[in-house]
Image (cartoon, rainbow, N blue to C red):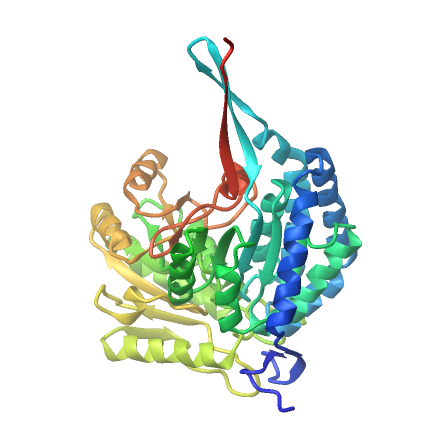
Length: 462
């Protein structure tokens, strides 16, 4: 049998182009068995005491740490994340498990309310098996930041991962087994798009969560809506990084470099549009370009590497096309702007300047190591430029005047605003977007309640 993207999930090293593994897509019968296990697992898991579910998360964190090297190395091998960043991803996931084990139970506690002379309260009940369609850019973190709170609430989880990181998916499944989760609580399916649609329609799937492109989210969200199922969408972003004239330039440049080029720029909430006040634009640009020029690009298995390859060659080609269109539209190229020579999917760290709202790199999401610098006349103009986007995931504001920055936050049309720091996701605060960046929230108490039935219980005392 020939191995093609139509028949197999193919794991290919993006730094070398070599095939690591291939996994034949599973049949409808295999999907049926996975859904049956998830439904059966839910029947027992939802009745497992909350304290025991929390303890299971502690064990999962321990299993992740015990297998940290294997997980990090697989992340690097399959999608090219520099090894130091991959290790950080695994540790962050272990910390997520610990945090929800310690803090999640109080988020699920009944909430009493007063209804005249009668008793009433809200109980947070699980919904059932959740179908999760997940991306490749954070192969462990993206999965667990949705799965961990959902599992704590008593749901079960069926993971359909991106085809190029199925090795990561199966290692994660092993970690759940090592942590002694009951059968069916966490399932992995490797199926084509037709069977994903079948799973969404299946009566045993209670809800769907998707992290991915606008196109994928729109398609899957429409199918979930047609089936009247709860859906959370965490989609793309073209996040604004605003630098006002009174900003600390050293801090702003340092944050700008990390916020754009971490994970080789393949982050939905990465800073992508750098909107800088005229009075500071030249100085910011000069320092920013100098800092980007110093970034170490190369073998992602080496600790010193900061920028690795892009995950797939087609994504690199798409990014290069976006850069070329932006230049043809009148932007100037300050650094990079081309595919790197040699094997692998490397793209040169790139800085575009004189970008305007009509240009490709302003209007579209550039999912790779490319930064666009846009000049703003003043703070009000910077705000208007930031909001002039179909996306609304996060934004950053750098200013010495925190009160003014907070006023800007009030008017930014995004799910999260970071003042004098760059975008991040953290268990303690909610994460999600508005507009075409999606809807619903992950993390914090929002994440643990997102896939709950907020059930009202009302007791008549007569």
